Image 1 (cartoon, rainbow, N blue to C red):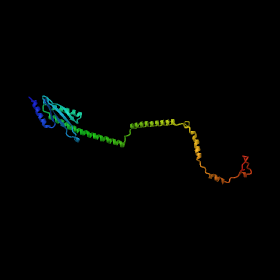
Image 2: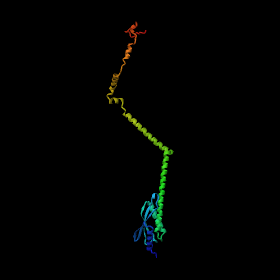
Image 3: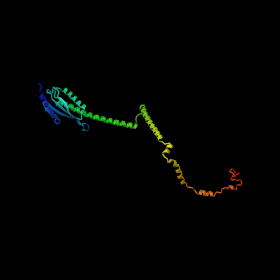
Length: 243
């Protein structure tokens, strides 16, 4: 007859020796304990970690132990789900044998895989960003290839913008025409307009300068005297001194 209690006590002693810094007893009846598992350091010393809680069933190891994720750090929900599936698979495969060390070792390897996946994912994201930046730079220097579709789209947009500009200009011209005053409206608006021309002439007359020397020169001119013409008749407008 199998002494389950003896097998369980022996395994607990072994586990405490193997994991002195991460093994913690929670209760003795039923035997329950936790083991903290940490991955190897990844990029930038990043690690993932989980604390597994195990509770022996009465007939362990002929029955699988109860297990759960007690706590975790830096793990995604899907990672936690994968770890639980892994524990279930390993427990079924090792049924009948003490298995806690085997289960913990499997989880340790899984955590190391997760760290590697994080590194790979970040490298892929970095490459994707570099590729997107390169494509953006190519678009900047080479522009977008012209196709019938994007040309027609551009032309429709251009025509719509041009039509809006024409409508705006016509509206502005129409508004300017409405605001322009007729001559009558100008006269009615400013009653001083009827005297402005007179005032201008008066101001101009006061500022006219006469060159008196021109009249002095005329005195020196020898003008022909019509009185010396015997045929000249001042009473006869039709007389011609040149006849």
